Image 1 (tube, rainbow, N blue to C red):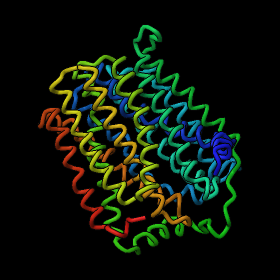
Image 2: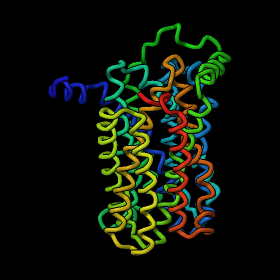
Image 3: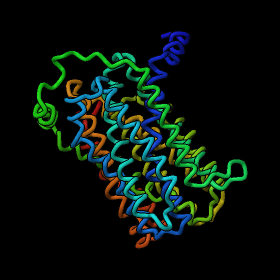
Length: 412
C-alpha cells in the first residue's frame, strides 16, 4: 500500500468510528482502578482496602459468561452490536457521573457498588465493540483497525488517568475528584455519537447462532478439541499476571513514595501513555519481522525486567528521573507485550465464534489483574515495596515456560 493510500484509509470514516469506539471502551477502566485508587490513597484509605478495590473489575474476567447473549439477542431495533453498545454507553454515562455526589471518606461502600456496576457495563461494552470491529472491518483492515482502536483506548486512558489526575487540585484546572468523574461521564457521550453514526455490520446468516444453547456451548467445544488447548489457556492466564499484580499497586506506590498529583499525572500517566504507544508501534514492527512466537518470548522477558525496575524508586526517593525511567521502560515493554499478545489472541480465535471466544480469552487474560491483584496490598505489607516488585517480576517465568511448551503450536 502506498503512503497516500495508507493515510487515506487511516483517516477514513471507518477508522474514525473505530477510534471513538476504542475511546469509549478505554475511558471507564482507570476510573475504577488507577485513578480511583489514587483518590482513595489521598483520602488515607487503608492500603489493604485499596488492594481489595481491584476486585471491582472482576467483570472483565467474567464477561465470557454473558458474552453469548450478545451474539444471540438484540433490542431497540438497532441490531446485535449497536443495540448493546448504545445501552451500555448510556448506563456508563449515568453511573460515572453519579460519583459526583459521593466521597470515599464517608461513602466508600456506595462508591464500591457504583464501581462494580461501571466495570460490568464497561466489560459488556468491550464484548460488543470487539465483535463489532471484527464484523465491520474487512480482513485486510483488521490490523489497522486494531491499532486505531488501541490509540483511541490509550488516549481515553490519558484523559481519565494522567490528565484527569493532574487536573485535580492543580493551579491550572482546580477540579475536585467528584468534578473529574462528572466530566468523564459527559465524555462517554462521544462513544454514543459514534454508535449512532455507525452502520450495523452485515453478517452471514449461517454464522449466527440459531439457539442460545449453540451460542453458549459451541465456542467452548471447538476450542477445547484443539491440540494443547489447556496449555494455551494456561499461557494466556500467566503471560500478563506479574505485570498485572505490580500495576494494581502503582498508584498508591507513587503516593507513598512522595510524588505529587502533577508528577503522577505528567510523568507516570502522560509519559506512560506516550511510551505505551511507542511500545505498540515497535511491537508491531518486530512482530512483522520475527513473528509472534519469538516476539512473545522477547517481550515477556522485557516485561519482567521493567516490573523489577520500579524497585529503583525505593532507593532514590521521589526523584523524577527514577520515576520517568521506570515508567517509560515499563510502558514501552508492556506496549510491545500487548501488541504481540493481542496478535496471538487473534490468531487463535475462530471467526465463527469471535465474540464469545475473544471474550473467553480476554477474560482469562485479565483474571490475574482483577482477582489476584486484590491481594497485592497484603503482598506489599508482607514484602515491602522493593521485594514486591521483584516477586512480580519472577511471576513472569511460568508464563514464559508455557511458551516453550507450546513451541511450534504458537509460532506464526
